[in-house]
Amino acid sequence: MVFVYKIGLDWGEKKSICNKFQHSSSVSCLVWPSKRPNEIVYGLAEGKVKIGLMKTHKPNTLYQLDSYVTAMCCNPEGSSVVATHLDGSIYLYNFDYPDRAARLIARHSCVPFALAWGTSIAVAGNNNTVVFYDEDGGEEQTFDMSDNPECKEFTVAASNPTGDAMVFGNFNSLYIFTRNKDTMSWEEKPPTKVDNMYSVTAMGWKLKADVTVGDASGECMAPSAAAAAAATLLSLSISLVSWVT
Image 1 (spheres, rainbow, N blue to C red):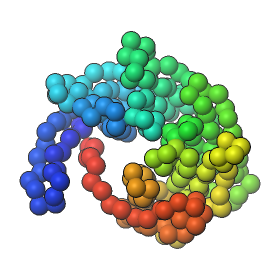
Image 2 (image 1 turned 90 degrees about the vertical axis):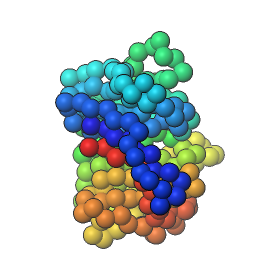
Image 3 (image 1 turned 120 degrees about the horizontal axis):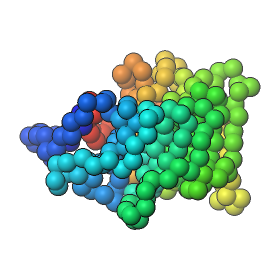
């Protein structure tokens, strides 16, 4: 079930549920496109990608597969959504063209759990490889870290608001990629080690360039060393956005 809470601007304001969308299948991922303030897009374990219409309090189906939805994210403009599935398929839906169905743009080489969309669509999973795609599914760049014994499974990713920096969560580490403005190619920065962080389960980037990192132990951490590695402000900020059950 997806709950949407009205939390107010101040911490002391009364919290209330303004929308809820109930399903028999578990919710596996969720995004709230910035350009669609009254619509929430989420994926289900049964393979459906749904859109929750908050004005009508009803969900619609964007598309359906028979494969678990592993990850989902929006483009920086908030006008499109990309979703990945357990079978490696990557689907893109553009809200500016509602008459067009979601389209398959690529098939990833492993289960894609880490997904981010900036100036490119970045995907990673358990094969120690990060791949950057364009919006048509063309493979732009590939970074293979299989020769690094400390690199484990990539579990989550996030893009900064301008789309020229990506952070990927790994076991006790963060892998950072930035886009070179001269060559327009992606460059890998040295991994940032964060002891006792374990597997990164959630990550989000605020509009003011702050990143929030959550780990498998339920804690949130501020990886200060990542600031130097990415040449970007990476400081901890905790924000309540939405709850998914």
